[in-house]
Image (cartoon, rainbow, N blue to C red; front, top):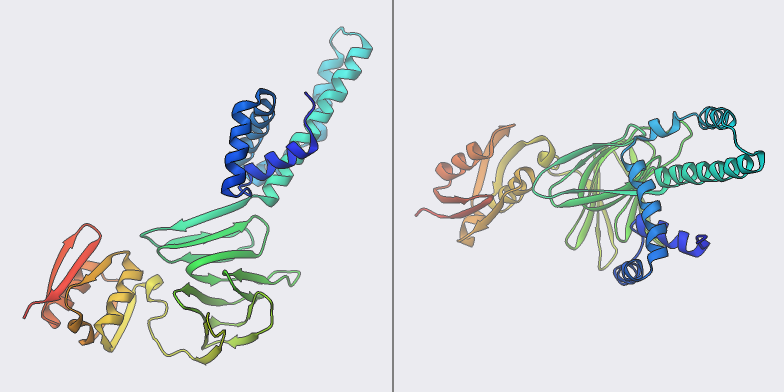
Length: 318
């Protein structure tokens, strides 16, 4: 059975994760019911798995012409009819063209997803840019692309592109465009916030009706409901504490302290008595273990603390 172009396009979309849930169910049902379609899908799936198991450099380093010439030389040495040889040659050449076409297609267009659950993950992109992904956050990206989709919070260290191509971070409704800089993007709750450590960034909505430029030492907060942009100087000394685990608390409320500790260490802190959230803490910690900081809080603020796995229960000891 000769593969239909529409079927091939559908298979590639499925293998690339581009089908929605309903389309995917219909696709898998067809695979079960149609043996010929299942056979084609299986062959393409094997090719994609081969790509996934080989690095892009390994694929690029394959000399297709050399491999084809070696194959042709060996084939010509066999005693076969010339007509059969030509048919075989054209068939193999077509197969090689299709396979390497798929190599190129998937190495360029496949979207990769990285999810940090109860941990912080660092990822280096092909252009040299680095991403530190906060806990409970997700990024998706393609190889050789300077576009990253984000859900949650991440710190970006962006390298400049030789051709001046922008690096873009997209959330559901907003985008951040840069050339080379270091910044934090946080899309959690009712607001999206961008904090610039170095360089200059441009923040806009998806329709680009509203956009602002934010420079080093500034932050912009966008209310998702009103779409109002508020630019101000960075106030918090702990905006990177979730990444660095360095904390400077100066009469900081325990509400903020607990939020920062949750983000940095991946624990869930359950407060049994809301009154303790108004208490404050003045202290500095640098790369301390979570247990050490909790012990200081327990003594300093007269707290009762109980640990169950990754859940911390906090109440007043008075």
